[in-house]
Length: 312
Image (spheres, rainbow, N blue to C red):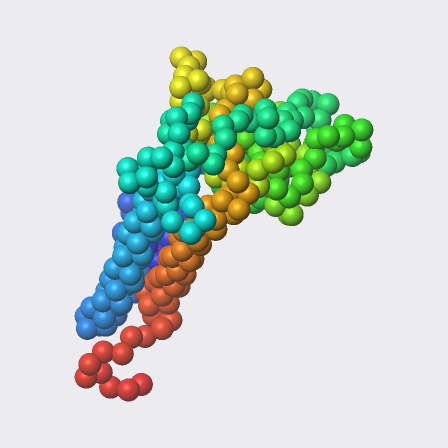
């Protein structure tokens, strides 16, 4: 009953406009394709094989995500030396120093968001921003996830050219979410790509434009464990909505690495993300294949040969 045919049959038995319910009499009348028992078993075997492949791929992705988190922790606390090796604070304590961020490599500096970024708040929404004569695309909180921007639903607002001065996005800008009910999501950050060049953004987002840091490293840092601990510490609330303001954002501590080391850190982090994306794409293909096979096999559109069955 999980096939497209089965779902359509269920939909046809649902009655009611405001509160849907199943009509038992109609449910009993649903016609179910009944292939021979050997063919049923082969169909089940095929789908079970796909389910197992999906489960194993999900496990691989979960493991890779754990490995990535551990790698990012090391990269953003120990860094990578000129030989491409993680620094070891136990074997080489002389390579580290005390700082407001804890023990960090001697080559690093500790700065702040205010010193490393230009900070801009977005456009305040209201009835006067309903698009009429000068519609312009803008990004909302719903578009900004951690590490990615979702463009599946982009809204427009009313904005004359003067309204957009200093309020548009360029590739490499970072967007930080101002508030969220879930403390794990407070301050989540994504990078603008060429797809959103010229877009504007709403007032519940802050735009960070890096001045010294590479945009890729800046994104890693703003989504990293140190920054998330900062938000947890500074944004506790009893109102049910965790919010940040410009002052809190300005004061976020930021590690400033030599540019070549920023590039080395970013390359390793992107390698880990690329592996996860490869497995995620494989998972999407497996799920699509399963949906297609269920529809074909469970409707009889494609027949499964069984041992001893005569050729048609």
